Image 1 (cartoon, rainbow, N blue to C red):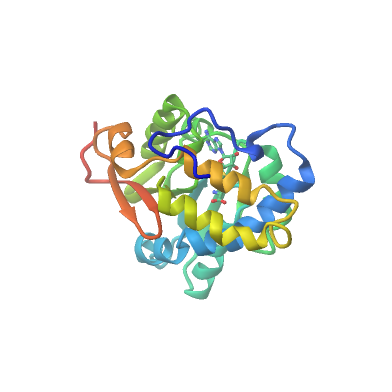
Image 2 (image 1 turned 90 degrees about the horizontal axis):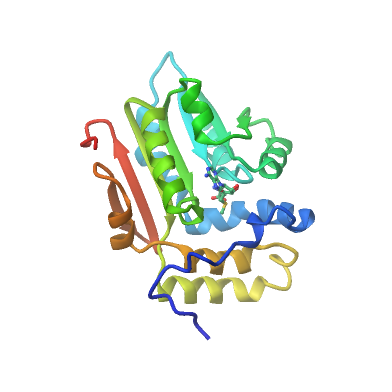
Length: 241
Ligand SMILES: C[S@@+](CC[C@H](N)C(=O)[O-])C[C@H]1O[C@@H](n2cnc3c(N)ncnc32)[C@H](O)[C@@H]1O
């Protein structure tokens, strides 16, 4: 039976957020994020539209991934940038030490910088980036955490840069599609991970486009995309609150 998707399930908690979650299942979840994200998050679009055009000869492009989890987006970006001959410094940030430890151990020569921290630490250190991104982070946050994330990401992006927070959009089609697409793999590929259960909880916790517009401070732009995607953007030149 499909749950009520008319309102955000803000009290539903993802299993991976439990500090006492089974570590083997959590690590298997990080491992499986990569193929799932490639299918649902369209990282190639982010790369072509927001990252590659900012590459410039003679200086490294500074990229920050907030809530990087297992680091698969960072590794994918590192490999595309290397293929295109664009020098880059990529930072994977996550307050969850378990995620950072796993991502660091699976760097595979990508040369990513791993930081077990919140954005406030980078703001305090005066760090700046050309592109600040996140994937599947927004729906995890309380209203105050969302506000902090957005304020900090604006402070962390340098002149000419862009902040792009991407997430799932809540809806019946997204819930039904994710449920149907992951069902055949529940007892094999996804077994022993939180992917299927947390994915369905994530969709219930996620925003719709109008809800995210309402939640975002002035100056941020919200777009919907395919398949069941949301994007919250801020670029220099957009009105500051
Ligand atoms: C669903 S995972 C997404 C991981 C990865 N970005 C991906 O797309 O696979 C959400 C991540 O956000 C992290 N997170 C939760 N609250 C955060 C916050 N306030 N700031 C930064 N990261 C946070 C969690 O530790 C978790 O690793």
